[in-house]
Amino acid sequence: MEDRSSNEGSVLSSGEAGGTELLFQQIADSAPVLIWLSDEEGMCTWFNRPWLEFRGRAMEQELGVGWCEGVHPEDLERCLATYRSHFRRREPFQMEYRIRCHDGSFCWVLDRGQPRFGERGSFLGFIGSCTDITYSKRAEEALRESEKLAVVGRLAASIAHEINNPLEAVMNLLYIAAYSADEVTRVSLDAAQQELMRISQITAQTLQFRRQKSLPEPVRVRSLLQSVMGLYKGRFAQTGVDVVCEEIGDPVLVCYAGEIRQLMANFIGNALDAMPEGGGLRIRVRPATDWRDDSAGLRLTVADSGCGMNVETRRHVYDPFFTTKENTGTGLGLWVSAGIAEKHHGSISVRSSERPGASGTVFSVIFPERGASA
Ligand code: ADP
Ligand code: MG
Image: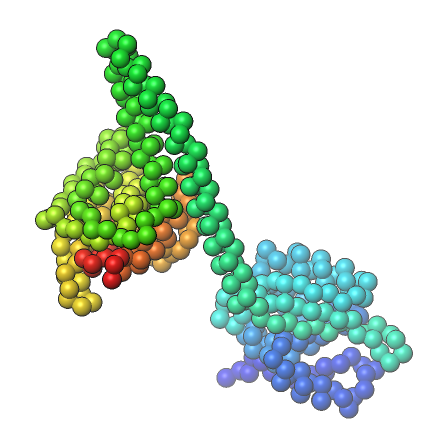
């Protein structure tokens, strides 16, 4: 097998002390950092063994500007600009960029470059050392995302709060106006009131989601589902979706009602998004055995005959901000839903197919009856 990480060859440029070369190479090869050297022209002339192993490439491939092939296309221009400008001024630099590692994925590195000078002060090029900072970059990113989420949550709650008061006033005014209106106007006013009622329910839910009661309560799942169905009545009619709601028994779940409503609404909303030309939606609530300990549980299933999902989408559906709906999606619905299921000790699963003529998606959650109180 070819030893791709062989870094035999001259380390230092001619004119440097030959006896130190071997020692330098040994030290550089055993250091837990990726080291590179460049000459007076800026061309890379040597890489240590950890660099070659990290990259999974041979020395000849990396020499000169070969290493640039691995730099992430979005980072390359910035990276070269920093390198060139500091090189020209012979000043130390520090930069972060993504570079492809041996397994084909991109890793973040922090690269520190230092100019090298000979004994008589002649400029010899640069020496650089890189450390893998992928882990801390990911942690930073996760932190930023969670901050964004907190902002979104607060924003939603404050908007809902601001909307509530004028909304109530308008609804009262419409109610009064309906008294003195003729029959035709009254029909329109009634319709307007119905629509405002929907908005009112949405804002109430948003507020409830934020200010949840401190204790979960036993709730009839059937009534929860009916209130969610009420919210979507308009969209069901608009999209011509055929809805079948199957409730077997009248199960009670100990839960945070607002959150379970939100979870149901997210599943149904997604199903409708997947069926812009109409289709079938089947929602089922039925007692189930919790396979984890054979105790009584409850299964909620939302199945649609929509477009389905490919493997990539299925893998990421629960990630925050993952959406395939360019302008209309937030990518938060299923992430929030998975959190709600977890809080209620439920287990969420998805099956989906894109097969023409038989495409569709089934989301289901099994809750233990004792729900969030366990
Ligand atoms: P969003 O509402 O912004 O799309 P979600 O978290 O609700 O965010 O869903 C994430 C992604 O999962 C959606 O953009 C979509 O690609 C996919 N998805 C979710 N539910 C369905 C479904 N019933 N059918 C097809 N794709 C779905
Ligand atoms: Mg959604």
